[in-house]
Image (cartoon, rainbow, N blue to C red; front, side, top):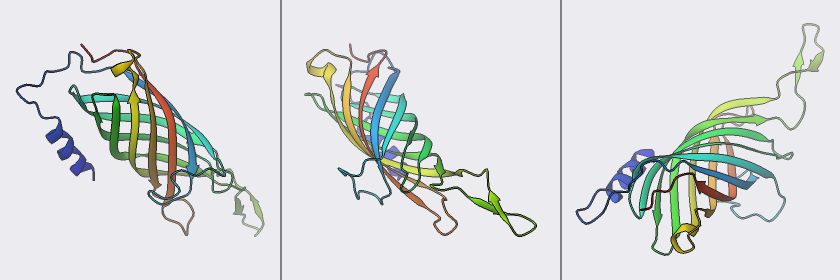
Length: 204
């Protein structure tokens, strides 16, 4: 999927004779989003009204190629969620992504990548001692590599309203490599509501 995304993005952002280059490569974008977590397989339970398992994500972007309507970039995100039913978690992700923005400011995102997810157990864990008894273990969870995909839609207020702010919603799916001994993949769905602000603009 990452290979296809790279090919698609480079093809869409290839320089055309009548297309101007953007003046600045990096815009130092910072994003903050609230999310709702679910134990779900891809594209299931995307918009769930209840129960609510809240989370928070802070992110930034590194631009590879910027055009007036398209951007090929990489994200860096750190976040977490609280889910007492299936286990809370904290994560760090990096995704290769592509964005298309229309003349009216409507934008679409797609990305995929890797990361690390720390999944916390919902109950205390116990370890057997040499005498056969059990004591509470210091082990609170499992850290594992993860694979990520996301799809997003948003609105760039700078296009029509001269405000350096983007409002967006994003569906993200994170699959960690381990959780319990009998469940080798933990599926996580996150639905984000967020804002993004660029410290420097790429617009002329």
